[in-house]
Image (cartoon, rainbow, N blue to C red; front, side, top):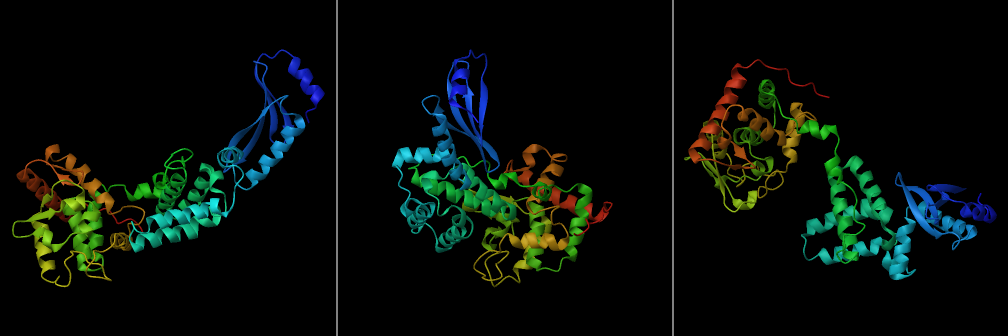
Length: 390
C-alpha cells in the first residue's frame, strides 16, 4: 500500500522514465518524466483490459483515490465502464430513472417504426429485443451503455444464430443512435458476427471441382423431393444466377418459345431488366414443368401459399438430404461455374454480377456451351464418390 510520506519522497526524486507504483486492486500511480503523477484504475470488462483516469496526485489524495477506485469497481461489476458513467453524469447529471433505461429507449424506437414497418417486421424486431437483448441491457441506464456491453450480448447470440446476431447489432445501433441524436460516437461494436463466421460457413461456399460435379447430379437424381425443386436446382447450374433470383422466378418471365428468361429490374436491383438466354436443356424441362403448374404463377411456389415463392430453406434442405451439408451450398454453384468457365470461355462471354455481358449471341453460346459441358461431364467423366453424410 502506498503512504503519503513515501509518495512525497518518491515524487521529489528525479525521474528518467515513466513507471508505476501499485496500491492494489487495480489502483496505481503513474509517474511521468515531466514530474506529473497520475492515478489510474486498471480493470477488465468483456475480456479486455481498460484504464480509468482518476486524477492527479497530490490533488487527489491516496484516500480519495481508493474511494474512487472502489466506486469504479462496483460499476465494473455491473458491466458498466466508469468512464461512460462520468460522461453521462456530465451530460445529464445523476438522473438514471426508468425513463432513461435502454428498455425505455427501445420502446420509443419501436413506436417510431410501427407505421414504417410491416406487421411482420415489427413483431420480429419486438421479439428479438424481448428475447435476446432486453434481459441483459433493458434495466441499464442507456447513458452508461457502451460498446463492450452491446458486443458481449451480440457475441452470445452469434454462437447459436449468426444471422440473428447481425439483426441484433442493427437494432442496438439504431436505438443508441436515436438516443444520441444521430451521433455515431461509442457505437463501435466491432465486426458484425456474420462476417466472422467459422470455417464451416467457408466450406459451404467452397466450389466443387469438375470431377465432383457428376456426384452432385447423381445425388440430385436420387433426391425424392418435388420435381419443381429439382428443376430449380438444375436452373441454378444452367444459368449460374443467384439462388434468390431463381426462387422468385415467375412463369410470366419465361418466353420458352424464344428460349429467353427476362428477369425484372426490381428483382436484381438494376436500371433495366436482364434477359437470360436459356440453354436447350432448361427449355425442355421448364416446358414440361409448366404444363403441370396451373396452381401458381411461381416456378417454385411456397407450399403454404401458392401466391408466394418458396423460401431459401427449400434449397438448403434439399442439399442436406443429398448429403452436402457443410460441404457445398446453393450459393456456391455460381462460383463453381464461373471458375470452370473462366478456363474455357473468353471473359466477355461470362456472367458477371448476376447480369450477362457481351452480345446476346455470345451469351447464348456461352450458356449453351456450359449446359452441354455439364451433360458431357456427367455422362463421361470419372465419378468421384459422394461425400459421406454426417
